[in-house]
Amino acid sequence: MEHGSFNDPSQGTFSMTDEDHTLANSIRFTLNQDPRVTFCGYSIPHPSDARVNIRIQTTGDPAREVLKDSCQDQMLVCQHVRSTFDQAVMEFKRKQALKSLQSMDIKS
Image (cartoon, rainbow, N blue to C red; front, side, top):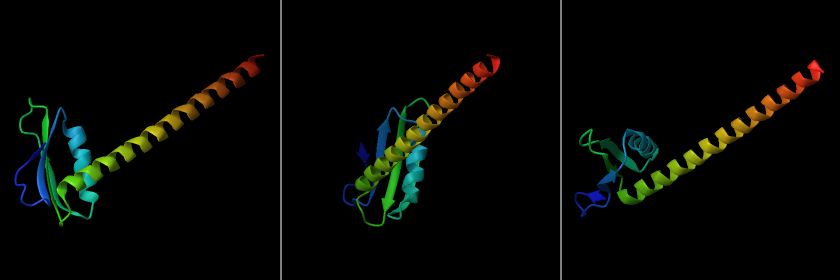
C-alpha cells in the first residue's frame, strides 16, 4: 500500500504487511545501490505490528517503479543464492558418496 502525497511520483512511502527487518533491510540495501534513489529508509511502527514502512525518494523516476525494480533484483539474488546452495549440496553429497565407496573398497 502506498501512503503520502500522490502529487510527486518521485517519492513515496510504501507499507508492507506481514514483513519484518529481514525483507525491509534487504530491499533498503538494494534500493540504496540504485543510482536513481536519493533517499531510502524503513521503519517498523511497532514491534507487535507485522508491518514495515519503506520511504523512497528518487531523482525523478516514479518511486513505485524503482521499488518494483528493486524487488525484482532481490528475486534474482535469491534465485542465485538458491542455485548456488543447491549445487554445493549436490557436490557435497557426491563427495560423501565417493568417500563411502572408497572406504568400502579399502575394507574389502
